[in-house]
Length: 233
Image 1 (tube, rainbow, N blue to C red):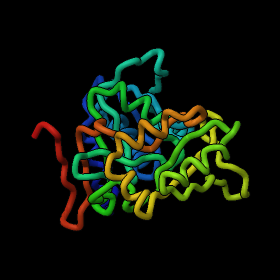
Image 2: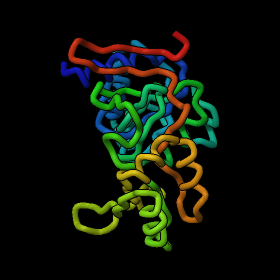
Image 3: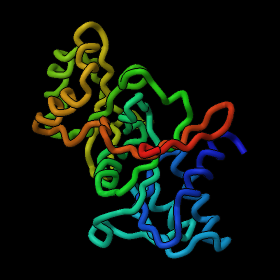
């Protein structure tokens, strides 16, 4: 197995029979869902149910015969397993490259534990050093955010699909990817919480890709192997 596959297996190993799960989105999360399906078929676990964070994850989960629930049926979850685009030393995250950040954050916030599966290249000294910050916005007036973001030292770009049309999230919104650079942008990145609050205060910005204080378990794939870290360890 590749290190990524080993990490997915280790993350799936956190799941116990009877758990209510949040099922993340992205290539790594898909490997976890497939491993959970195998564990169910082989009788290693039973009676698990999941809340998917995207339509793609829902389709894969059904193919793996993992029973699914809505948030109305499962307002609290035992564990969510997901990936991340960046992880800082305080275990704050940037997520959203897969286009499902709003659903992912809703599910993360109702989870007793949030396990993040990633390779060690995702570990950064500061959020924003490696990846742009995604913002999920309503289509109406999306362009009104551009000058505001530029004033914060950002370089905002509307995310587009392969055909050139705006990328549409499962909630019918659009995504602006914003990289912060220069003196102003670097200053903004020094306080993710303050920047997050500033961005979410704008009408039309539904959510940001900052996931702050939500991760409780890290499953990190390194060249030397897979490491599972817990906040309470």
